[in-house]
Length: 434
Ligand code: UD1
Image 1 (cartoon, rainbow, N blue to C red):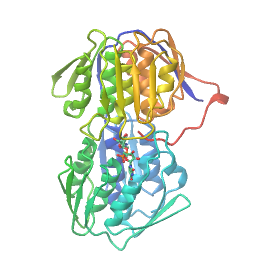
Image 2: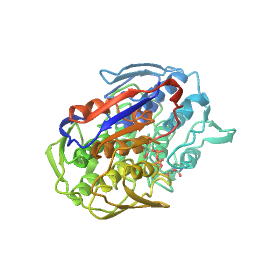
Image 3: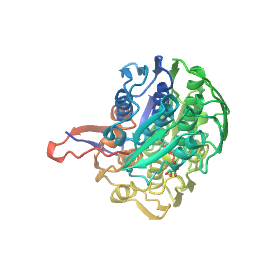
């Protein structure tokens, strides 16, 4: 049965909420467990569809996996990795499945994995992953959607990324950790999730320095061992919850956050007239001020404004006083939430990678459909602020990245209900990433 969310908007959200462990840190770290035959324990892994998909990928490769969602604890024991090929069905579920390529190449001479499926937010090629891994000595052959990789042992190299791709940086670091000699990765992504991955790898015995800067140096080691690692809090979920407080004219305190990871969002919230306070080393409060003022923003690789918060921030700008311009520089097609926002009364025009938002005093509830994870969050935020009732369809996109979100919003005062639909209306789940 497919599900939808019924939201009766217009209630200012107030209260405290704990942020879950990071999805985008958990997924590469789960892939990294394949770099050893020993057991790894990962803590604070959120109970999400994407995590289930990655568990299926690890199991598909022969690893033994035990996940206790209540405790957020995940054990992985890959053993000798008998399987170095992945079924298409598993790879198609999400783009992050491609992150097993680096670890597999580091441990096996031949690997075969499907190209990640099509995606709702742009073409998202994997050329940078393959170029980087080729520099380490891997050879690739792509045919009928399958990537066949081979190597006679990876060798450290100097690699320059044309764009600081998060996934390519992760795949290269993981492969280089077990390569012979030194790898220097220039123009690497600097996202906090890269730092978390490098910290986990270092605790497995890797020698990585510079993660979090654009130059990462990896001294290859002959083998890695198991470890225990706690993933960082999810900065995108934290941002979404803070925005939920501000957009509804309320005030939300998020706990279990790393404020430094949210600098760009907090600066934009303050610029728009919201009141932002750091209440402690891991607690932030955001409250609505008078009506939100229009602000311009441009998404950029970290530490710039995150593309994963652009749709949610756009919902806020739809209610701002004045005209805002949002430029999306990371993905080519990340405005699919605009149709839903406009059907709720927003006035947003998209031209290429730019959206012009004429702020309105109010939005009205409407039936809308989510098209991707962050777009779903944007429509949910707009619905919480809108007058009247919104039915948010295709809500499975939201479960890819948020766990128990509707319950936590309800605790903050939201009138929100999860409803199961007739089976004939259920649609297949897409293969998206975010
Ligand atoms: C990760 C995040 C995603 C986030 C994105 C950007 C995970 C699981 N997902 O995705 O939530 O939105 O970072 O912060 O961590 N590109 C290429 N060639 C490549 C690789 C990427 O052209 O080989 C392009 C992509 O098409 C895209 C841009 O680079 O336009 C950014 O992609 P990338 O940083 O790789 O994002 P992901 O790792 O897929």
